[in-house]
Image (cartoon, rainbow, N blue to C red):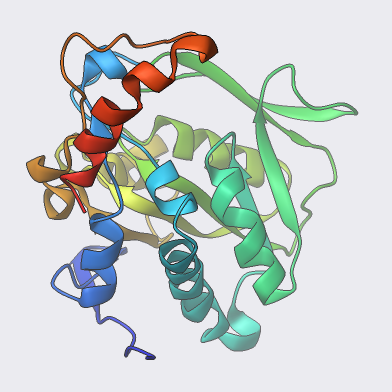
Amino acid sequence: RVMASPAVITLGPQHFCLDQTDEHVRAIAASLPWYGPKYSPHDVPSFYDVSGITEDPVVFQRVVDLFVARYRAQGEAGPTHIAGFDARGFLFGPPIALALKIPFVMIRKAGKLPGVLVSSGKYVTEYSTDETVMRLGSVRAGDRVVLIDDLIATGGTAIAGFNLVDQLGARVHEFAAMVSLPFLDGVTKIHEYADGKFKDVPCFTMVDDATIGAEMGSDPPTDTPRIVAAADADKYFAAVDAARAKKQ
């Protein structure tokens, strides 16, 4: 059954999201488990696990289709390139670019790309201090680039991408993320950066963390190790599966 496209809501100046009551959005939110600090790669209250999306081909396709529909509807004024952030932007960017028949460009962490590169310089995220790079010539003057990631938090990574595209002579068409953490105010930080240098660039998000909710917390029983040996995996399947099954 084909569902109607969700309404797009304006949250603020140049900040748009999907209607959080729509069944598309609810289905995506219901496929996004999160973990607390003990079972996460970073010490954050809630770490969203996009494998809940990628391991469900129906929901994964829905996410891709919603992004594609947005940019396809823009016609010749739409993007000429999709650029994804290392690493989870690499999950969503390529299928969107392929569907639109436009190039996908990698924004990688320093030390990962060959060739002549342009660097963002050091920047601070909610996790660490990072540096990202793009290949010189991957985008050029006149290109309209959608920057895509799985999530926007403080906006530090996004701003690094804005600067890279700008340094290469192209223009950011839109920043897009599947999940938004509004309490960290990342979109406002993008628009206020450098005296409003990017204030006119739209930001589009799909699912707010409040829509995902506390019920998607998926920590297993507290005596479950964070890392288990492959030989011992059978001992823990039941506990991990039970924790995730409660969310389905």
